[in-house]
Length: 292
Ligand code: ATP
Image (cartoon, rainbow, N blue to C red):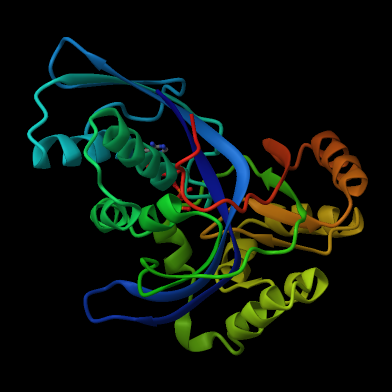
């Protein structure tokens, strides 16, 4: 069985407050894009989980979210039969694109199907949140408002069709660093998440793009000016807007013209500002029931 684990971008990202338990409450507009890892799952005669990946620096044991997801269902449903899992990563790691969370989502969906567990999407999402706050969204996919620590989801109408250019600089930013560089009390103006929801509802692509904001961006740009350089290059190339996704450092540009996006992708490659350059588009199908 082969599944696709799709990446996400944040069209808007606000951090509302820090809770007493140390977690931050967020308000984010999530959007799935057509960039994905591939996860193969098969039953095997040897008991246990046998995971391999194409990246030497991604762990293949219980630290991998795919492993965790498979183990969670195997323990709960007392599955004795072993599985082999092969994960081909294309989504940049530690990039603010929920790669690991989406892999976990694919593992839950795949195990559910392979062993005929008959769990609904909601039941999988409930289990997914114990692995990571973004996992339920990665199961649901499409356009959504995420609140709480990211796990309280409200589906939104799909964003208008658009092209998305991804540029990930050759630096890694942990979510921890992003929060350390964020001074909540100094945020003068929070992203207009509700206005963005209205723009999406009205299918106003330019209006939506104009409202893109991420509270993590200024702190990361202060430390890594390359993020601003990639943004500038995308805007010069005709992006309706360009912004950092999640806790960074990946930058995405929203385009209404494929030609402009492809020209800009070429310029970005030639500039060597980004290690990964990927030209794609939004993905608006809910759930992963149709994946093979
Ligand atoms: P988010 O957008 O949710 O903040 P991210 O892009 O910052 O995610 P990931 O790429 O999902 O981060 O994962 C980063 C860390 O998680 C790495 O340190 C990596 O070793 C570990 N990890 C565990 N499982 C995976 C996986 N399946 N794919 C990638 N990284 C994984």
